[in-house]
Length: 531
Ligand code: ADP
Ligand code: MG
Ligand code: ZN
Image (tube, rainbow, N blue to C red; front, side, top):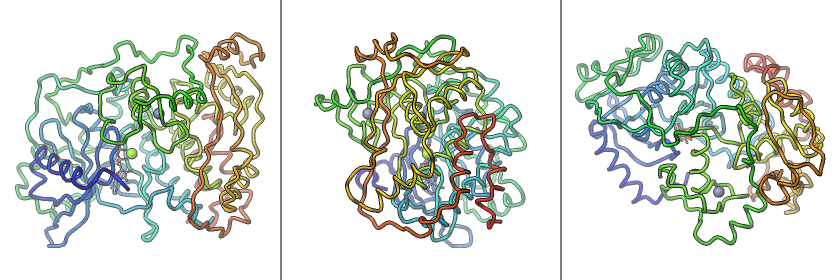
């Protein structure tokens, strides 16, 4: 993981010590290992009471995170975590508006680095373990909402897996996670998840101990050499079984940077789509809009200027302009390339099936050797890309089932999954530099999503098409190209059984109501040799 230079990291580590001074006595924070829009994650060494040193991951949440949101993330980890490939939590520290979640550290591979040297057997194992994690969280009524390789840690040597990052999680109607219920009922909070600004109601320095389920709790507490233990710990104690407000004295009113964003789906979506091809060209001309990776991700969304031109199309990194843009439209939404059709079309009833779709996208990457498989910068492009694989008729049909009308400018046939994956995989292993036909394909396709009407194809000369010719409403379908130079593991890939593609097809069922569940998927014939 190449993050900022080491001195920059050192500065940030020092700032973290200053923000949460309790950490200084307990941890030696070694390095920064991850940075997202809403958190920074550090590797730290802590001394156990036994005298042994242990590695921890310290997740420092941005101070603007909503307190209920933070508490819900913690509760997901503490209630569902620690078993079946779901990351657990050891402690949580808080000082004022700074919160640090302490987890056991799991050293892990970067998905893109190992993608091409996994045998087919290992690929199956990976999927089995991912589905196991999903079965567990879905049992608790947790919809993760951001299932993707960087949130599913895999240690090849230890054969360990861990689903992390409940920062976007939501509850099912019958969720067992109390704070997800709170997020559900507090509609204002749950639908927004907008940057939270403190309104003067500062809280006291505190340490929170998160209860581990079962008897582990006691041993963890005893092992741990907190310098100033019991009383301080108890003050902030909250457990999964006794849900009470962790930040009780805080004002829960949500500050919204976007007062007009009511997220309703009443009207026909206006031309939200951008012509990706045009965007790329425009980006080339723009001198000011460079994709830099330096901390700009934390700028508030309103720092985004409309006249800036994106620079990241067809690159493996999202530029800061797009980061800002994404939050402006849908704050804290998952990654477009992993989002299910019902999410992309903003279907209000989203279930655990959306995580299954994301798992399907990961499986698609594994089978095809392409990552990211879909690299759309926004929802409409993402939907267009899905259509090129699953077919336009199928998409329209499925959307109808969840009350959406998708208008599409042309008929795109569904692709046969084995042919698609084997073709793409071959292109990787031959290293010909020649792009596979599927990658070359770039047809312009226009989409429109409407509420609950009869679906139809737009004639080529429709208004929508006219709009497109003025460059305001079109969407380019594309499959990302990606070549690298590492050796390719071909073990088992010459005889991928039909079951694999059958499961892929079931995970990527366009209709969430019929999509396979994690529990069912674990019983799929593909996994017949797994316990
Ligand atoms: P974010 O919400 O910012 O995406 P995550 O919880 O996904 O935060 O963590 C970001 C990254 O930090 C992960 O992709 C992973 O590389 C690393 N990370 C998170 N938790 C752990 C952990 N327990 N052990 C090792 N690395 C971790
Ligand atoms: Mg993450
Ligand atoms: Zn961009």
